[in-house]
Structure formats: structure tokens, C-alpha cells
Length: 486
Image 1 (cartoon, rainbow, N blue to C red):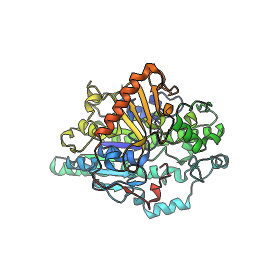
Image 2: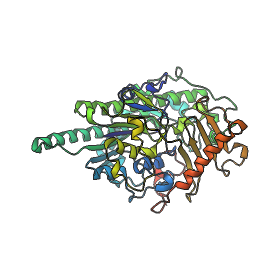
Image 3: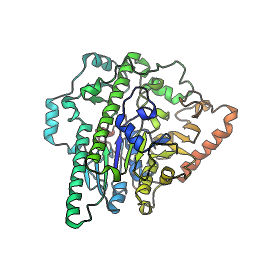
Image 4: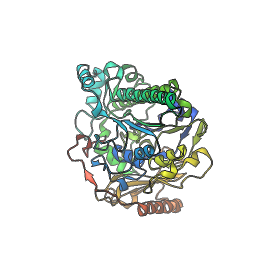
């Protein structure tokens, strides 16, 4: 099986999802050959915790990597241990963000940024990324609370991208697939049985900022011609934390020109990501592996990408918390289907195991659900799924949590984050208000909906398991800086 993950991909920004501008021909083709999900959500809209959720089937409250500044304990069983025990050769190529990147976490083969040969890094230093002078002027003027250079920035990659992270990791993933095919051929010739099946997690980092893209992708979208809705004064007044985020990061000082530029370069990064997905899918076809390989594509979380005057993640709007999720498995998963099952990162490990027939060997200590029959048949899905962020250091609660049902989304803010009781709950009718503009939480006609979703949140917290291992901060890891949005 091939699991492809990206970083910070807004689920709305796919051609197959109806986006009018962004070009994603390879992901569109994958969706046409498989099933695309419209109600897939991240466990936590920030990189590290949600990544360890999908490899363990546990919420971050349970695996202990509460935020980017925590270490994922190497004693945790992961999907690598599971599939290896089931006879698969396992590999993870690219980002894990465990803050212990040298450890393999059960994978037979691990290749990360730290594995890049010194000669490749030396060549990159000799061929640094270029700046578009006009773009640099606009990007340098962007304000945020992280210092300079600001996170919203882009460069033109040297060497057409083969020296950048995603170019390197795609090439290494292709090399792994070729090695596997060669070993399978050799084993088959020797004993007629063939080699062990493979489980490859190809972990790419685009369209996460900064957008360092090959020239063609960097300039693919003209900032003057893309879709863009300027911030409307007052549109965040009903959502106190989102408004505070806009003001605190100083995005309210960004001009429409700056936002258009950043959004256009983000689009270019999405299309470059799609290009690399296409290279991986093309390799499966070339090697004759496409028809018997489960392919799953998803991201760790989205990006607001300028919507509502907001950027990055760590919010519970769909642009930040919803996932693009596509599953292809010829003869098993319906082709060309659109599935509205509520599914979460925490469910992906058990669901993938269900699709390949190894669910009976899943770890006992798992919180995600095997939703494979919701994909292959007509089994009903869960009534609720959840996303949350800013877990308290003691693990007892979080700054915000979302309960999502088929029709509604309730966001509950911790009173310490939002002291005004009238703003501690935000309820959106996702059927009638998919752009999340009207807070119905204080409308008496929706009191029963608020109560039902609030009870679901209480039940969620009640069912959580305590972490098995000590929760530790990664104080000396620059990638784990608590202020980082990585």
C-alpha cells in the first residue's frame, strides 16, 4: 500500500472538489478512480500531534504529543509495527515530526531530512533559491508575531525542485518502489511466491510555507486573477478566538495585494504537490503495481489561505480542520464515489487495516474506528467526530474543541481563552451555511442542538485514555519551538 501525506492542504483546493482555479489533475484522477471524502477532519489542526494520531489511532491526549513542542515517545506501537507484524515491508520517507527523527518508530526503512546526503545539501548551498524582487518586497512587508522573515513568503527553487524536500522525498519514494519491485521479481523467480507486500508512507511538506517552488509552479497563478474574497469588517465578531488570532498575528495589517500574492503562491505549492503525487502514481503504473495497491492521500491539516482574513491553521473552520482524503483500491473501494462519512485522522489506521484485511490484529489500545465498511458498503458512520487544539500542559482539556455531526458544527472555547459566556460556543449549520458565517449558538431554536453536541464533547473527554508514557517537552529542538506553526 502507498500512503501519501501532504502538509497544510486546504480541502477546498482540489479540482475534483470544484475549486475554480487550482489545478490538481493527478489527485483528480485518483479521485475518479477511487473515493473522495467530504467530511474528513484532522484530530488537531497542527502538525506534530495530528501526525502521531494517524500513526497510532490515538488522540493526542492519549499518545502525549500535545503540541509541536513535545516528544513522541518511541515506545508507542504504530501502524508500522502493525503492518510489519502482518508481513509488510515498511518505509516512511519524509516528515514525521516526532521531535525524535532519528528513531524509526517501527519502520524497516526511514529516510528523513536528516538522511539527505551531504553532497546534496552542498549543491543546494551552491544553488540557493532565487527571489522575485517584487515578490520579496511584498513578502518582507508581511507582518506576523514570529519575526522576520515572515511565514508568508516564497522563493523560486534551484534545480527545478529536485534539491527541495519534496523533490528529494518523491525521488527516494520512487527508488523504494523500484527496489521493492525488483526484489519481488527476484523472489518470484526464485521460489514462485514473490516478495512481501509493502507499506510506504511518502510524507511530503507542501503546500506548507515557505513556498519554495520550481519556476513553472511558482508563477503558475497570477495574483491579480485568482479567486480572493477580501476581509469584511465584522465577519469575525461572533468568533472571538479567530478574531483575536487575526489581530494577534497582525494579519489585519496585510494588504489585499499581499494576501493575493501569498494565496497565488500557495496555489502553486498545491499544484507542485499534485505533480509529485503524479510521479508516485505513475511509478506504480510503470511497475505494474497500480491494480493491486491501496493508495490513500490525505494531509495533516488545512490552511485558512487568506479566507476571512486568516492564515495558517490552529482554528476549527473547515479550511483549517477539514482534510482532503482520497482512497483508491481497485475492486474494493468504489470508483468515482463521493463519501460523506464523518472520518478523522484517528480512524485512518484502523480503517486502512480493515481495507487490507488486518483489522483483527489491531492493537487493543486504540481509539479510532475501523470505518472500512462505510467505504466499501453501506454501513452507517459515527454520529460525531472531533477536532481540538492547544491541549493544556497537564492534558486536562484544551483551548478549543469541535463536535461535528452530519449537519452541524459546535465549537466550544475554554473560558480562560474566551471569558465572555456569550462567545464561548459557536454553532454553524454546515448545510445552510457552509462558509461558516452565522453563529447560531445563542438562538433558542437551536438550544437542543447545542446541548446534544455539548454532551458529545463531554462524552469524548470521558472516554479518553491517559498516556502510557511520560509527556515530555522537546526544549532543545528548534523545530519544536512552541511558537512555531510548523
